[in-house]
Length: 337
Image (cartoon, rainbow, N blue to C red):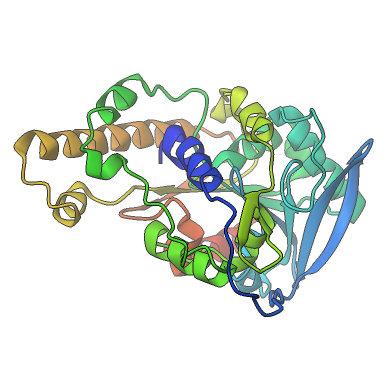
């Protein structure tokens, strides 16, 4: 999805969750079989690192903007038969430190490299979702000797993208498609209820552990305030770096997700007005054109690239299309020298 949709609007929606009251919730336990450690990457800065174990070469998972490594709970375990699986929560989020600075993509990439050093990871595969594509590109271009391969999980968004036409069309979208539903008091009474509401509104089941990492828990167990200061996401998004994909010198597997097909959006939102239908179709067509441009660019990667297109996929492709993503990733991993 476009940067404005998969990062800015998502963060705005997350921040809209207010503090409310609910009945006392039972004790919750993170059932994901990972070990958790904090790794020092800079003066006064520690990152949360999850270790799901497994056999084979190491693979490191990087979350999209606003999320922590816990977004991969449930998915990561299914890679342990092929790899030793780790996840890094970048600075500013979850249990990682929230320093005032250090949110440029080169610094975030350096954080990743220092985790590799601390864990003694030799040539790991790195898989990243959404905005983590910036770190993947930095690794593949400037630190290709440190990684074995890169997996872009709908993460080819880049500063080279031209959103002028897309943004102009988006402002004309029917109001029904621009609105973001708000959770009811019932939806916010507990994290399990909130997770279910998010599943219904987002179309994928984000692990409850990820929401608990993002929001504070009120004394009564209800969902509290967003933990991360606005300045963190703003600083990360401010870079808007462009990358020359042809300079990526390691093998690449790139998943490209296309959002819900226009005919489905039209039917679900009961759009009978011809101009509204035309705009929905035009927005989708423009997005497809942008995605194809990204695909054309990544195919020139010096290390070679395999692109998998997923039609009607959710932006969280590793959840909405999990079986296909796992199959392609395991084949890719097996192909690496």
